[in-house]
Amino acid sequence: MAVCGAVDIGGTKIRLGIVETGGRILAEKKLSTRMGRDGALCNLRELRDGFLELCQTAGARYEELEGIGIVCTGPVNCIDGVIENPYTLPGWEGLRICERLKEETGKDVFLEHDVNGALLGEIETHGLENQRVLMTCFGTGIGVAVCDYDNRLYRAGHKYHPELGHMVIDSTVGAADTSCYCGQRGCFESLWSQTALNERAVRAGYEDFDGLYRAWVAGEVEAKEPMDVLCRYFQRGMWNLLLAFKPDVVILGGGVMENYYFLAADLLRRLAAGREDFLEDFEILPAGQEGSSALIGASVLVFGNQ
Image (cartoon, rainbow, N blue to C red; front, side, top):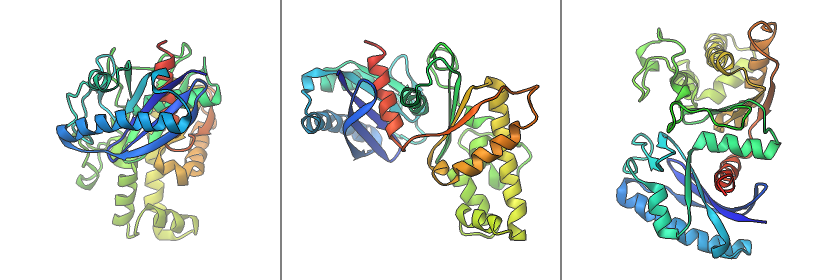
């Protein structure tokens, strides 16, 4: 089996691993994400050393690595191999990461947006090739990725990932709901990210979204209105995505879905019921273990370029 290096760069942690063809992760470890340009360059050196260590753990030779795939929180310029994200990776913006990591490791390096990478990993894991797959990840933000029947990722232009988590869902919301760095009022991310869910629950008098949800399930009258609003926002956002892409498969991922996948899947089914004139039948799947799909997707970048 061929092996490669795989990296998942987030705003707080970096995961790296040795992955073989077929998506089996042989060894992995985590690093803390360092901020600032000096921190970013330090992380690159840590990646080089980390791959040497993981190769020993995996029983692979460093020289055998066929390349390194990176998935990273965006915006990223995938074609030129440049991170352009000042929002969650301050100091990394403008970093030509593929070029710099190739200098550190001597390996060819490929870059992709993290939610695209997660989608590629899910397709590899579930054998979803030659289907139109929509993946939506609900975490600190909202990431959306689409892969078409020709196994091609949907892009905005040739270089960039479309930031569909920032489509406007409700432009009439109050000022408390508008604190999104995209500058728009009532975008999907500002209404249904983990942070947004918790903030709305606090304004409704609950400790966090978990508390609001439990009260709603228990039938507390005070929980009904805020939960109804949040359910409606979720369905509005997903309706727009379903109409735009008409997927065969919808994958729900991100930290929010670790606890609320069944709520979201039920809302999706209710949304699609009786809408055959607008929507094709689609399957709903939960994303795999957090991080694993991203590393597998990063490996697809390498093996797909051989």
